[in-house]
Amino acid sequence: MVRGATWAAFSAYHQFYFDGNRRAGRYTMNAVGMSHGFDAILIPASAKAAHERTVVEALESDDLTRHIRFLLDLHPNN
Image (cartoon, rainbow, N blue to C red; front, side):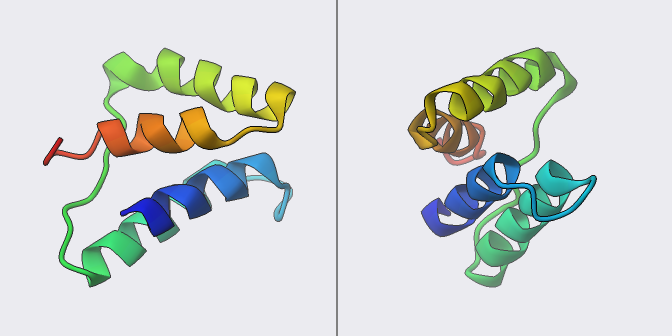
């Protein structure tokens, strides 16, 4: 799951597409994880604001570590 979460954070940080970077990154994260037998990571509505803050913090600090950790902490096996 680390590989997928890293890709999701990386794609949110870099502008690969005009729109949809975070959605595409989360889709890829779950595709990678599920192809290796992991459950999908879903961001519940109650965590949306915290996720947005984490993304902004990563953009401002150029450090994706907290964003990756946030995503991994949402995994159902944690």
